[in-house]
Image (cartoon, rainbow, N blue to C red; front, side, top):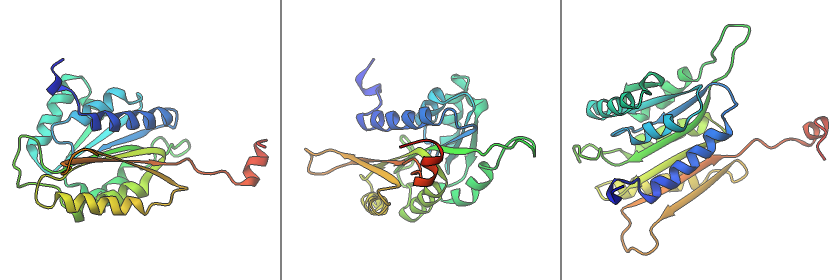
Length: 224
């Protein structure tokens, strides 16, 4: 394999965390995966290639070229039928996610849909117009919607690129927000270059921790 064609080390770290979440939630019932900024479709393809059979994928982007590239990539892999592509900005997730997570099945046996994974690649579309970039206020609004709906043991990856105007401010705002998450409910990991004076990219990985059992429920289940 040509080295330049490989996913970056930060992408590998994010993918490992996303697979961990999908594995943990494989038996949870219907599963929704989210690529909030699908770009050229690399993360979309990865998610569906490693997802349990019942999972479906929501792909979003504001650029038709991004959705077209993602669709071609998924069709080539035979996975397009499991994906819904929307020409919408991720800031609209607070209105989109509730309808995507409605229960499925008949009225007697309904199963809740879990939001298991979400990934964000922030900045501009590789190979596209560098003037079209993600914006801090939009990304924070999208992140709040994901944090609200993410299932326990679910994962969010945020790959932040800062080599453009506003990119550093966006990354710092996201870092400040996730640093405030309660540690008993969330684990937040950060990865960035430690040997470079200017950092062009960084990764944040969030895991929603399993709900803690109360003492009463533990006794009922026979736990010590």
